[in-house]
Length: 144
Image (cartoon, rainbow, N blue to C red; front, side, top):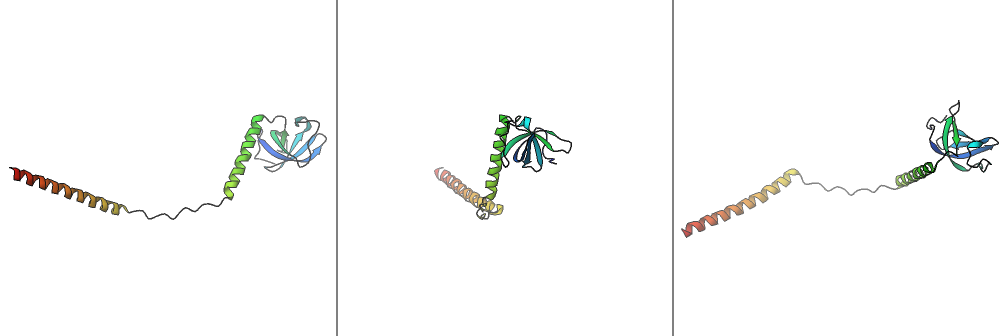
């Protein structure tokens, strides 16, 4: 009944019931899977109700319930699950933080105001150039 889990997926589950031939595992994604005794990490038992376990989906039964294995979980799977759980914890910590309100934006200068300032500066510079040119011209006329 867990359509979100596929063969090869790794999931965290909680032992619901230990039976002579295996254990029923309640999965975090919802639903229940069966962990056969031959697929347990310790075939002698070692599982207790309420214990969390990392399992891999190795198949689906005729009712689409996952068949699980602890033996087939690799070190890479464990590392990936630890990384995933850390990311989920980090995301929930970020979601619980209050958002910082940015300061109110200052009104930007309008383009026209910038152009007017530039024109005023350019006219001042042009006026200085004209005065210099006029003084040079008068100096040339006085010298000749």
